[in-house]
Every structure is written in C-alpha cells, then in structure tokens.
Length: 159
Image (cartoon, rainbow, N blue to C red; front, side):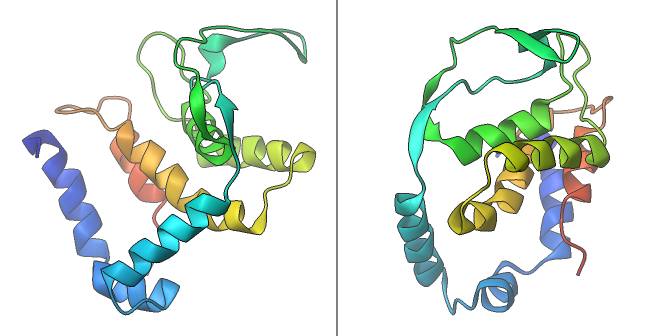
C-alpha cells in the first residue's frame, strides 16, 4: 500500500469498525454475506455507456444551456450511478489545482440530476458509498493542498 495514503486510511479505520458497520448498518454477520449482497445488487443496477469525465472543464455552456461535452476518451460501459457519483465529486475541477466543491454545491447537483432522472431504490442505496469512494480516489499522495482528504472524510456518517 502506498504510504502516503496510510494517514487517511487510518483516520477512516479509527472512525468505524468494519465488522460492526456490516452488522449494524446492513444486518450482515460476515463479509461473505455482504459480498453476496453486493454482487446481487450490482446485477440489478442498469449499465450503459458513460462519459466518465463530466466536470466543469469538459462541459461547455452558453448561459444556462450546455452547448458541448468534451473528452470522450474515458467513455466506458458502467453503471450510471458510478458516473453520477464521479461527476458530483469532480464537478468543479478544471485544469489546474483541482479541488473539491463544497458539500452544498454537490447536493444541488445531485438534487438537480434526481429531479430529471430519479434514482431507483437500489441506486439510492449505493449513492453515499460511491460518493465516498470517488472522493477517496481523488486524495493525492503526499501533500493535499486543495483539501481532497478532509472533503472525503467529511462525507463519512458521524457515529
């Protein structure tokens, strides 16, 4: 494991015992049962072609109208929910000094999306963990001058 990520992982570990979280949050007695639930749930989520790089640098607009979407080289077949979570996290990134958007901006983006395209119950059950996963993926090794680590940690439910 990359040593630069260890402090963030330690902070996550200290906040929650994984076994206790499985039992309390999901009613699972062991990791195998949780794994079966994950596999079954993922099989029910619809997959489609996704852009996989929606962020402010790749969305051109004129006023309130989107005029173009750029950079399709990361397009792939995946669940739309993964795309939504990634877009919510990368929403404000441009080309330099990428930093997370405030929680209120992310919440507004997600509410707007769901007003047009509501999530299924299965998708809604996955959104929070996928948002955290995408946020953690943005934490850089070493220094974190733009605050991805604290932003990701702020998404954890408080015990």
